[in-house]
Length: 233
Image: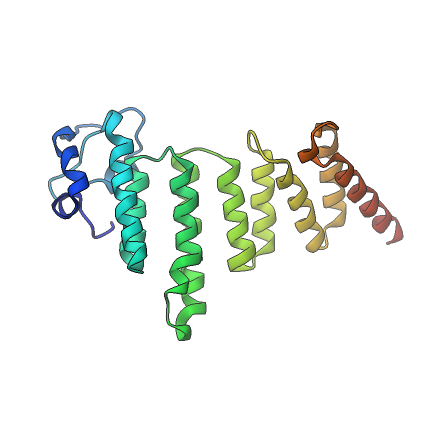
């Protein structure tokens, strides 16, 4: 899939050598792993084993290799090694969020000016696909939805998709309060004021008055403003 096998990485990276003794052949997908992860970790000798407690160490080594590829401004190697990082251990959000930022913001900057716009779109799609993979493997998380929303806002210019991602972020467990507010603002930017007002009215009872981060007074003011605009139409 990536053009990089574990065999090559073991040969080229000293940090991976101590992990070699902990690998064994698999007959079936072990508990806690996804088939896609094991496919990504397949080397020339076949499918590699679940690493148990060694997963963070292997993922850390792949991340280090990805960082070195990033320093060399090698987009193909960076993207491939990011895939191997999350295949080794999909649990840390750090890998998903920072990997997506590399793909969306750093890789386009390495392109010649003549093709940068076109390649920016391609790299943005790659970053969004990486985050969608994170949602499948890691599970729904507000931070992943927010990251997708920001890529749509800053890179693709797709406000509709950004609004959708912020709504999904707001609906995820332990969501930051600001996700709901930004979703409403994006609805407003799309001219969907009634929808924005209804959304904020549903959010208001959930906002504690004694938590500054909730910005309850701000949300109430926005509701009043939207109600005036709707009344004037």
